[in-house]
Image (spheres, one colour):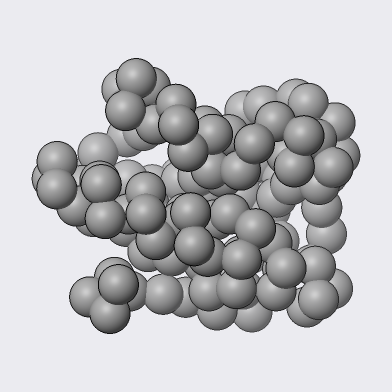
Length: 110
């Protein structure tokens, strides 16, 4: 996991709705997403990523978030094997919330 770059939440915008060229991929489960997620994030649960890979723009800067970074790292290892590059959001949603960054609730997706 040492080869996968990480970014602290404090270096990221609060909202990805208007981001062009960057995708915030949230790989948590549906209940976790509904409880609170980053505005403008793309939600694809970890187990669904291989089947939904076409929803991820291969040319975009990819940021991956989960609860605390473990699942994000696993997804990034998989994506690296199939030619995608990405960055792990260090500390995941735990750090996002602890940093006072806003979250949206509900099941809506981008």
